[in-house]
Length: 237
Image (tube, rainbow, N blue to C red):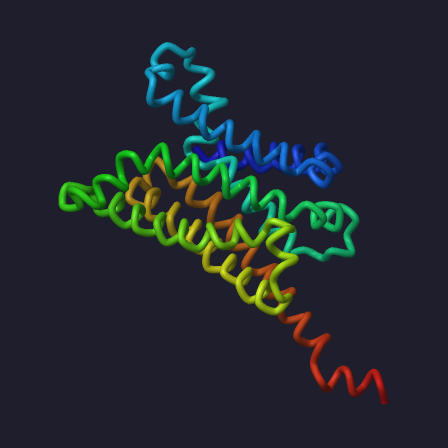
């Protein structure tokens, strides 16, 4: 449901602004909480707890994590922080916790992959011929995304970042762009075959990622113009 991603974005923004100071000072506690959420997800679906739990708990609490809506919303917020003008006070405030948000999103995404991977990753390696085409493609994309996401997550930790050369760190972090693109492609692979029932989701994700692409390209063009030799010469003339 498209409402999952829209509500998740709102919740992420409330979390980012409301816990901004706490995230800066006690990021480790939030990482531990994210790991505990993963453990709860796995236990919830592996021990039969899901069958005994009330439907509202599954529908409105567990599913946004299981389906990846909340971690995806966190990635979307991280995306937009980088595409918007940091002179804006609100954007600047979020910029200070961009790394922490991305790490939490990565951890929660691993939980999403663990829950679904128990079926789809196993089938991919043991019985791929029996998978639906969209499930097969989505599983491969997921593995590529995990391969990109893990180094991005590891190097987002301040302790790791400080040990890297600035240029090397920036070059590695540019992998975030293909990662963001793969999020959209992954969603489309799953939703387009069900267009009649998922068209609102397709529209919502296309608008979210399309607007981001426009903003990011616009910002890149402006940055390039501001850093151009001609402008530097004119300013110094």
